[in-house]
Length: 230
Image (cartoon, one colour):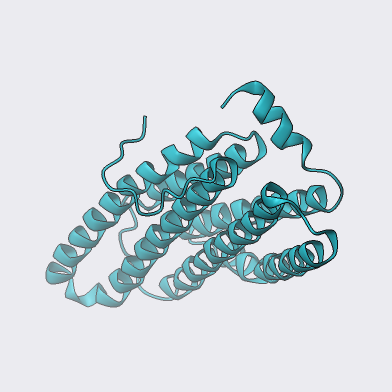
């Protein structure tokens, strides 16, 4: 994409579209913080951090509703052209993915609190590494949105495969461990669901990448087969 096209697209973010962008960035920042807090709560066995994740999720939920309402109002009152309309609806879809990532952070926080009531078990799996990979994908998705970078957005889609691989490895290891350490099966089940929550978060980051790519190129890559990210 040439610089002239990039600057043109950036210039469309004025008035209501700029307000939508700013609310989306606020939502992304809060979601990023909550997922980081959930991971920190897990690794540090910190109930207070887990409770904070749950408390702040309501703010993210409210922002998603406000964004959706603003999109409906903008489309119904401004008669936007195709590109502007695509921006508005893409912001709504991205906010939905962010809200779902935030829900997974809450799921991790709740599992962590339940884990902390059980006998101490090994949490040395790659949960933190997997979580950081997901957070990096989310940040790159928002960065590609702000900087009109569809190629960077497309790369996120390929990185989701690494998250899936890590989840499969963690699940396999947990199943092996449960067969040996039967006394701590309840703890390992919680860890299994935590790994799955991170895997789902990766899926939502992938959706953000797909939506950003479509926003700036009008090309739908959701069902492409076999493309390789650079």
